[in-house]
Image (cartoon, rainbow, N blue to C red; front, top):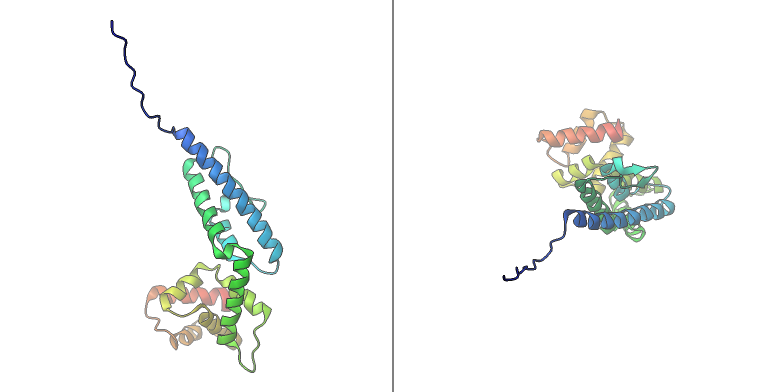
Length: 198
C-alpha cells in the first residue's frame, strides 16, 4: 500500500492574526497621539490647535478624560478608523510644535499684510482668533468655494464686527468681493455671520 503524500500548502495569515497586527499598530499610534497632544497643549496653552480639535471631533467617542483610548473588544472597522485618524494627525504639519510655530508665523505675516494700517495693529488675540478659525469646517469650505484667502475673509469679518453689521449688511459687504448667487455660499456666509459677528 502506497503511503499518502501530503502536499504542503502556504499557510495564509488568519483573520485573528491580521487583527492582532492591526491592534498593535493602532495601539502604538494612539500612544504617540496622546504624547503629541500632551506636548502641544503644554507648549501652546493660550490657544487651540486645529489638528488636535479635528481628531478629537472625529474620534470623540474614543476620548476619555482628554486621552484617546481603544475600546475593549473594538471591531476591526473601529481600529482602522482610529489608526487612520491618528496617522493623519501625526503626519500633519499642524500636528507638531515646529509646524504650529511656522503656521502661526505665516498667519501673522498674512494678517499683517491684509489688516495692518497706520491705525490698526495686529494683536496676539487677532492671531489666535485667526488661527482658531481653521478649526471651523464652514470657514474652510467658504474659502474654497469663493476663492478668497483666509486672511481676506478674516479681514472682512473683522471689519463687519467693527461696523456692527447686520446679516444683510454683512452679505452686501461680502458681495463687494465675491458674487454670492449660489445658495450654498450664501448659507455658509450666514453661518459665518451667526458664529463670528452676531
